Image 1 (tube, helix red, strand yellow):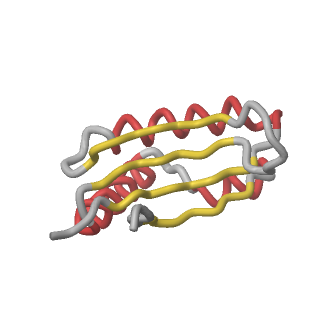
Image 2 (tube, helix red, strand yellow):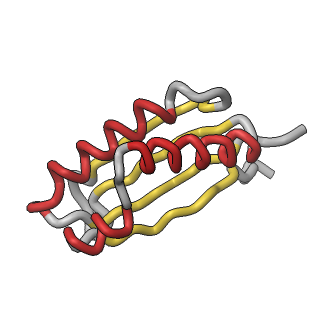
Length: 108
């Protein structure tokens, strides 16, 4: 049995870049949440604490194959809209830490 996989992306977004960043998140997440295998979606903004990441997105996926299929669909969307995330990140000074996570059982 495969466990759910979580895509967790953390961002440091300067205040002047937040509006443009969130517009792209909205567009991308509208696609992602419609795809097969997407089980959960959260977009979080830090409201307190010493951490430097002020935005975190979490997407739950039923399996790794669903994530891989989603990557292809996102690439198609970006190509269609001529959007290049790394170019935007560089231009706006956004830093990202992206990765897949799996829940662990700490009850034993």
